[in-house]
Amino acid sequence: MRYVSFAIVIGMSAFSGCVKPTTQLAPVSPVAVRAEEARQREIVLIELNRAQKRLDDIAFELLAAAAGLCQEDVAPRLGIGYTTADVYGEEYEQAARSALGLSDVITITSVSSGSPAEEAGIQEGDELLAVQGSRLPLGGDGLEAATEGIRLAGLSGAVNLTIRRVGVENEVSVTPKSVCAYPAVVEIEGPINAYADGERVVFTWAMMRFANDDELKTIVGHEIAHNAMKHIDAQKKNALLGGLFGALLDVATESVTGVPTQGENTAAFMNSGAASYSQDFEREADYVGMYILARANMDLERAPDVWRQMGQISPSAIAYASSHPSNAERFVRLTQIIEEIERKRSMGVELLPEMRERD
Ligand SMILES: [Zn+2]
Image 1 (cartoon, protein in one colour):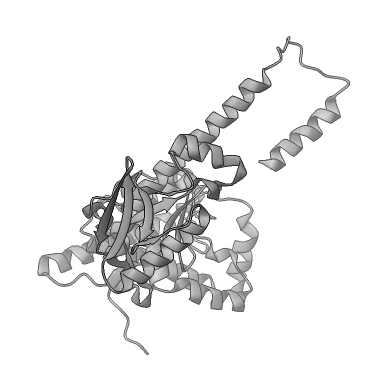
Image 2: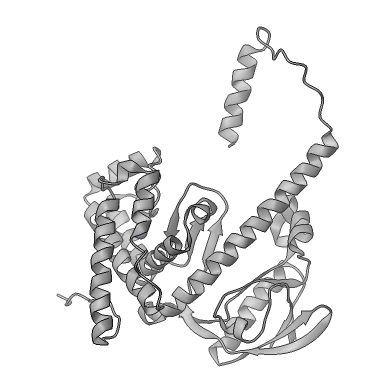
């Protein structure tokens, strides 16, 4: 963005003196522009919050379904998101107060479908005053205290929350669920992309707008699988060998959007000889991801379609494989994996990925 406006400034100064607009441009009211800036910031927060809630709903179910696959990364979770106005920073704090109704008291902004918090009756907009009877500080400090308090209490059973709704305080006991502890996060900037970093699963806002729920489920399952199968640690080791970080970026860097800046990384990666590892990690994440969806009893039929969608925004990746397999191969593999899962379902066999014999 900054680069674009810089280019425009250069362009205008080069032409000033010889060419000017010929229409009569009326001055605009700076007050009206400031007001519009404030409104646009509010819209950003409202839509971002909506995207985060949608992701939380899908992710919580899948993180719970994957619990048997992510080993020591399992943690007790209630299925809530919460925040305060001050953490939005100078530019967005006012919009957070006016558009999202946030304050210095912790407010619950997201209650995932089917989560323990939803079952306990917690609602979006509830204020969180205390955990285990211990009052939380105001502002960002309170967020850390709340997260740590919930984590500690959750390790040994039910978590007692003091909730305030329309001025009335209530004690609510929530029994957490063991889920893979990979928070699902919407990232505001960036092209259509999703990636796993070993600790979180991250989706750009562009991806949230691009993907429908079925497609999003497939991608969330895939990213959880990367973390559960410890691909990031393995990639880092491979990256040390190949001296390459670019391959950690998932899904969209080259195989979805064909972002040209990724070309160098991809080329270096291919040369490093580690590309086959990366492609196999992608195949494995697709494979394990389908099992995660199946374990959540999700309908798998539409899942492969995500690769036809991706093919439309990056036709070069239909047949081209770099650090990721081609979109066509990924579609065909997903349909095969679904057949494997359906066979197991019809035989009443537990839905677990087939593991290789250790050498
Ligand atoms: Zn991947």
